[in-house]
Length: 362
Image 1 (cartoon, rainbow, N blue to C red):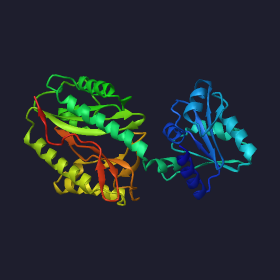
Image 2: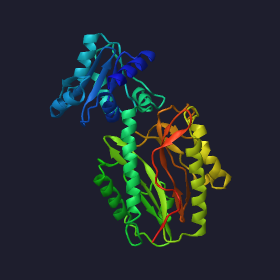
Image 3: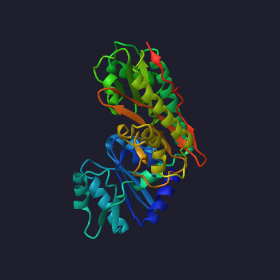
Image 4: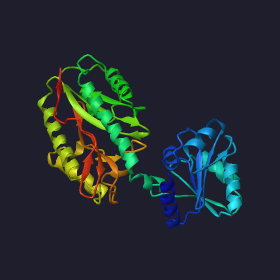
């Protein structure tokens, strides 16, 4: 955590930020190690404060040794920040505009002394801490590797369970229960189990629909292990699917494997996106692939960087991203295949290892 604070302070100095108020839960945990549900960080070049209430004071002192813990109440966060700013003679305090509600912003602004500006930082869509979080250290990578291994084991398990007659919700519950039995804290996001025509819904969260024979089932799930997420998607068949669905499966698999084989640090998110998108477009299904090719994962299941046509920045070495192209035919069905990879200058390390052949269970 000390090294992360040093990197943040270097970035603050580069951006001429003399104080930063950190309110996002994931950013708070990343910088301090504190896992409680309430608290903010107030960081200056020579001090680091963790403000939290009575429930978490002892926990914060134990988990965040590089921070000075300051007890507050629900109504005194702003006044405490104002007093700390006044003591230091600060002129500007930066805040995270993507994470602070307008009501909270107004509460801080209204108690700050006259002459202190309260300004947003990271209005380009990526905050200072999120920029640091893109590059994972070895401890983070080990946690994501463990989360990925749990997802792989869970996919192998669900193949022994999946059959016609089960509801999507029953499958989703079995996925989550098995992940927890393997050591996961829980699911990284609401589990997607989308069968038959519903597999054409990219985010078809599990419903009460009964899975039938000859259908594709998209399974999109991930585990949380010591705070870090995995994100795995496989599409399987329950019985023999129609030829059209087999065809799009082969196209998506080709596109996804091309992405994993060629994505690397240094290329832009747009270039990485094109690795998969070009294959699908050349096959005549470009309009049926409407989302980006991938996204970063870590403390959150969706974080920077993005593998999309809108991301012109180079992807950094050490980022963990998904590669997840898909084709979706409304009223018919869809296919998505997704892996988690660590970017390197030479290519990537694939963390998820579940098979990608079209598996048909009966």
